[in-house]
Length: 145
Image (cartoon, rainbow, N blue to C red; front, side, top):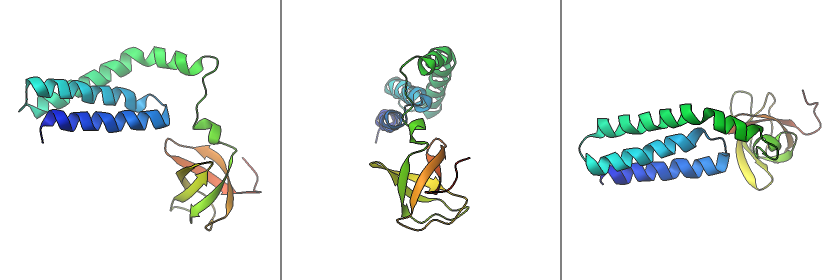
């Protein structure tokens, strides 16, 4: 497989992941992969040049759009879909034990989740915080901190 095709696949995966998270973290890395794909069409054998050009593009986009993305997140009407999960009820799909994540279903979505307590399959839980891809939950009826 040609390097430009690999870069396009990487860009596609990153951009799809960005659409699911809406955090802007993966958007610029995905755009860097697009730049690397363009460079791969010009310099097919220069993988180091491709990677460096993609990384440089991602870094420049991140630095020069930081103010813009911050303003967008702080604007009226912006809703962080993931942050809205805090306080919602879910159900344990795969058991969770302290130090070992499991899976919970909140609404129609499944998430990796951790808890300070052991939670069995089908236990009702409430989301108390979230990371980028992992929720912290507690058994439904516990006190929120």
